[in-house]
Image (cartoon, rainbow, N blue to C red; front, top):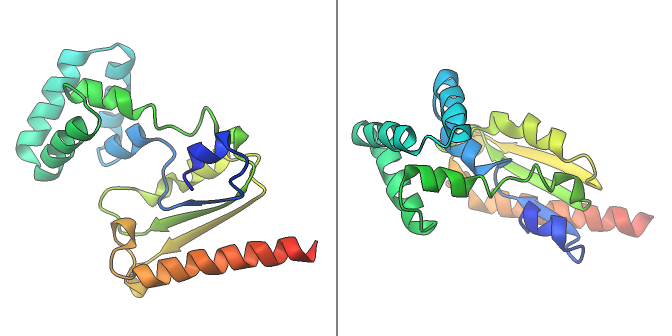
Length: 175
C-alpha cells in the first residue's frame, strides 16, 4: 500500500513502498546536477513558468528520456506544460504526512535505477519518525534486480515482500 494512503487509513497495517520516493518532484529533478536542482527549486518558488518551460523544452530536445518523461507526465497528470507538471508532482510528497504513517513499512530500492536515485533513502527514512517498524531493502546487479521497479528479478522482490509480511506477522504473534 502506498505510504500516503497509509497516513490516512489506519486499516492499512503494512506498507510496501516499491521505490525510494520521498517526493515525486525531487525524483524528476534528482537526475540533474545539483546546481540545476537548486535553480529549479528557486524558479518554482518564484512561479517562473516561462523559465521552467524554456529549460525543460531545451532539455527535452537534447535528451529523449526527458522528452518522453515530460510528454508522458503532462498527459498522465493533465498538465498543460512543464511548469504545471512540476507543480502537480509536488502533490506527491510524503513529508507533510510522513509523521502520520504509523504502520510497519518496507521500502524497496534498486542500485542502478535510471529514474530513481536510491540515495534519497536517508531523506525518506528521516521523515518516517512514527512508523512501527522500518525495513529498507536495496536490490543490486548481483541479484539481477538493480533496474527501475527491479525489472530483471521480480520473483526475488515479490518473495522478499511476502517474507517480510510473514516476518512482521510472526513478530506480532509473539507479542
